[in-house]
Image (tube, rainbow, N blue to C red; front, side):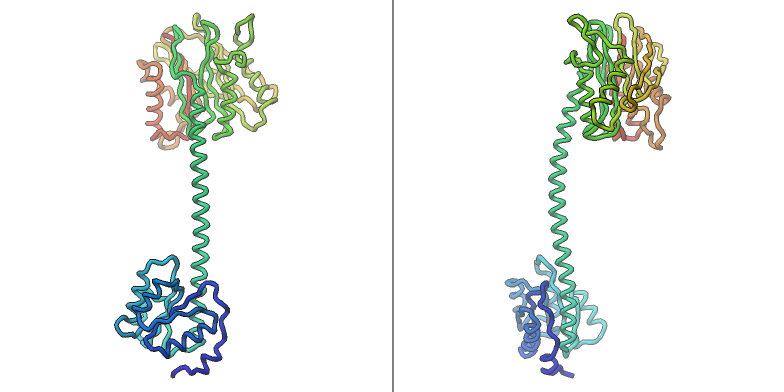
Length: 420
């Protein structure tokens, strides 16, 4: 049964569209186009008309068409062919496509969906049904528009985040270079001894540092500390501590005391107590750190040390025997007024002292088991014939073999003293 003009005239008007502005009506029948267009205009839409698929494609190239209502059966280019060509157009947004057809078989509907039709209207077209299909299309396009807006916002946000990340990454890379500059020379000879240091932060910057400084002509200070946590806060604390154990500014070195125009060593246990008092009184932070500090007399081989929560240092004797020394002790910065007890050992020719961070002792193997002191000893024994940086580089490589790669979960640092 054909729709009457009365049905179209009394169909309820739609609300003005905010996601559909231009509707293209395509039909080779001028009368049918005018009937559809009149109602669509009355419902608040801007309507474009085409009498063929070729004409419709030209309109789509010149106008932003949001929704298409096209007859299926048209000469030369059918509605199905036009739909396929419409989908091939380069568009910034989605276009909703309603196909008008008198065909009822399921195969025809499947064919239309396959080429890109979104909906179908059976002919003769009823005004209320057309309006319902248009409103459904409008909801789809509105959601698509909202999704595009959200995607643009996400893309803009992602771009801003990437810009900030790149800037932060550059800053952290510079901070890493600055932190590495806090290290003394990687290897130095203080006859009759050789000192070498290593540092491998697990991130851009870390909380570990190891180093040495001369105390007069025949004495040497060695230190290794590990600030809790990771990242910028730990690195800033590390820089502060590096200044307190610097050989370049002995007047600021907390391990030294003025002595008649020169500087004398402060007992290691006292160094730990002074650092603890300083952190408790001046450094406003929740960070704490572990420490091993050693005062080495190069003439006698006597080493006075303090251990404050840091892993036990390893002594490898000339014969190859490995000992782990130390008294344990509390980390620094946890308890006000805490005290530490120093200890002593003697190094002879051919002996070496290796102070390492927990990034070494707690490094996990491929199964997750920590290396521990026994594992450290296994790594050290085959290296008796190596010295200086070659010793530390090989040790680090073997540690990577145990871990299954050099992406260590924690900072790895150490200082090696060898008596020649």
